[in-house]
Length: 233
Image (cartoon, rainbow, N blue to C red; front, side):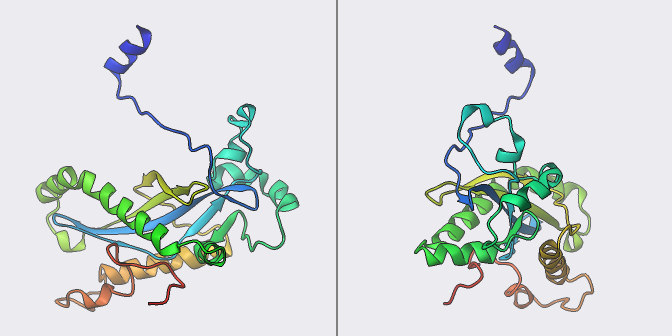
């Protein structure tokens, strides 16, 4: 009865924990993928092919008593920063970590070396991002039409966080509407400067491409056809 009363008075959120996450050097990892939305009416979005793999500071364990240990199960930098020295003491020197991060390209290359179909994984991530945006398209699009007077300079950069299980199936964890673009490491500086630069080019802040449609975005984002870095066509 207490649970029923809670559900009636609140909006519950049901989550499922993925028990068999893909591990890097024994650590749980999640992936930050950047998506730019330049229009919700109609929906127009682009995905950035470069991203970050974020690593827990303690090696993963499936033992039930460890599930409250955020350093083994949550990859957020703000949480794991306090255990960075402990991470450095146990991590493999063969993996090019930068802090508790890896370049997404490194991860893709490691997958390819094991015969994993990276293009299939990336296609599923793109499809997931597209469907997620579609889910909010009607409500957000209505608000845009009502309240955004100048739609040509209205845009949003979103941070999609994904986890892969041991079978390389992607799971969307959350969407951040205001992803942190402050660089905390050399790698973050490279990725975040790149996404910021390309985003400003995409939305044409300096009006260098005013009246030119399509051609300026092909090398920047492409939610429908983008391939992961390192792919040859």
